[in-house]
Image (cartoon, rainbow, N blue to C red; front, side):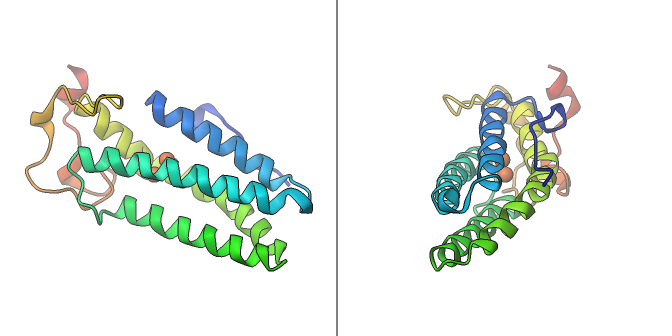
Length: 167
Ligand SMILES: [Fe+2]
Ligand SMILES: [Fe+2]
């Protein structure tokens, strides 16, 4: 099976996000290639990593004026729920369910990273967001209202201003 590999096409120029994404891609590849006896343990590890990955992005969104029910955070919740259902089925011996989900996660991740995460990275760069401190250099770029869309790709209120990006 040709699995997902880390490529330049997945780099979003937000190092803290890129590092976690590269770990995710590597862990997913190991999980997809795992023998049956290691599959459930690696799947559980992938769920734990994904929980931390999504929690971090959700915290950044909260700090950057996204509404708690925005579509990006909602997609995170749905994917984790599906992964946990896979773990439950795997624990019952239905390893094919986990294998099918692992196959589907690759294309899902490419789409998610190149759309929702890319829009979030662009938004965070446009406000000069510091992921360590949570501070922002250009808070005036933030919209007045809470952001409920995906953070740029499908929400005009969240589109970063070119002048801020260039500053
Ligand atoms: Fe992500
Ligand atoms: Fe995300």
